Length: 320
Image 1: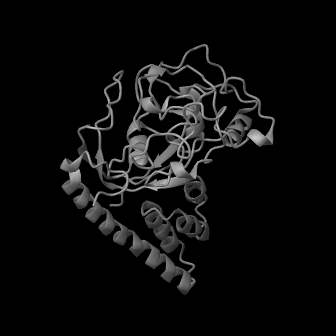
Image 2 (image 1 turned 30 degrees about the vertical axis):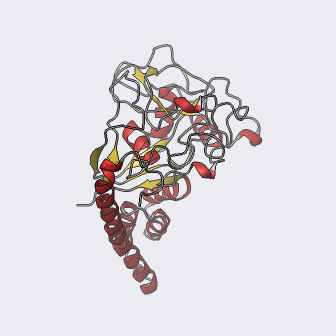
């Protein structure tokens, strides 16, 4: 039997899929251990801060953000509690382990079409939390408010940020209107997105994380499976008049639970060098047949658009 979202046209990877499923099930069993230790600590009503701190670290690495936030709170580790709270409320867990994936396109190259693609096995060692949705206008407004009265400081110190850039205000920024607060933050350039992420102790999501979050360990064609992009899965093809509030399409959920990775607004992708960066996922205007769960061709990092937003992530160092 072929798992949901895996096309029958790719029988050559059935054996690899079966092996991956076995590895994933065993990894789930390892994650249960930290939960059991957490329950024991709560039953003992321990006040041992070191024990709670160690538990918080283990729980966060295992993807149990809610329990990790509680453990860090009990031992007074505020920065870690803040990270775990973000992971609990605004992120999903991309677990380490084996993933089938299509090789990422070379800079400037068009992404490969999904059907008939050659897949490779990737072993991820770092646990990662990635934003469940795009960063919202409400979240970005908090960042803008935190910069008020401060001199502009360049986000990137490698010379690629233009000397003409002097603020992080999005194109056409109007913070008024609570009815729009949950729309994705758009009109931002690459440097705005990186600046926001760094202000939260996070990173702008990169191509590997976005691709794996969208397609899952078994390399689905799209986050929801094999069906062509469109309603009720994604806001694409001008089916609606504009972007919708982040997370409006539960049918867009990927295997890890991320939403809106296809359509609504396209998303900046982090790159370490160069003056261009790709975007991911397309926007509400994108023709369905043009969409892929892969980064697109790079564009100038200074470009701002009301159809482009971003998503953040946090990679953790593996235990041991």
